[in-house]
Amino acid sequence: MVDASIGGKTGVNHPKGKNLIGAFHQPRLVLIDPDTLNTLPAREFRAGMAEVIKYGVIWDAELFGQLEATTRTDRRQYYSDGFLTDILRRSCQAKVDVVSQDEKESGLRAILNYGHTIGHAIESLTHYRTFKHGEGVGLGMIAVGEIAVQLGLWSKDCAERQYRLIEKTGLPTQLPATFETEAVLDVLTTDKKVKAGQVRFIMPTAIAKVEITDRVPTENILKALHQMQTAA
Ligand SMILES: [Zn+2]
Image (cartoon, rainbow, N blue to C red; front, side):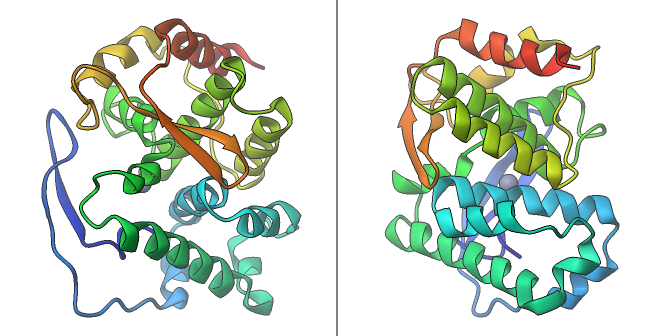
């Protein structure tokens, strides 16, 4: 509803990675019925919320604030006072804003991949069995947030706010002890977003502000991932 429904990007998975084969094709109509979310397992709902949080971090500070401020913890509570409809609408609007400025993913649209570069690597390395897509994105956002702090791009306070929001939503915040963090680097270099050998990262610089950089030292990636593995 908040992500794949808008933008006209269609894709299928390949053993070498997620969404590697696809096309851009705009639908004639997008129909969103929030009530259908109530038929999902709670874990799937939370996974979807990771993309909503993403829109808060990359584009919409008010959405981020709404999510931070709410005391809703259970999915059913999201339905009261039009809260769910509101966050769905805001997320869709964020995607429309970005995509309408960049339909074929040449520049701005790349910011939609926030949390996804490392997220996809985590999903792939755990063979798509341990984490739902949204859970991978949540972990990817935590990792990139930490890297951004290490590189002096983002304040520690902002990174903590993002972490707390992801945690509050009931999404995983830690990597399994058996996870091989070094293997992430191999996956990153086969990621479809690699341009001329450089991995591009979407780095937050404020709430609702990001920048694209291909200058992220390997050691920072590993340090962030290790931290997510050992933190109690
Ligand atoms: Zn996604």
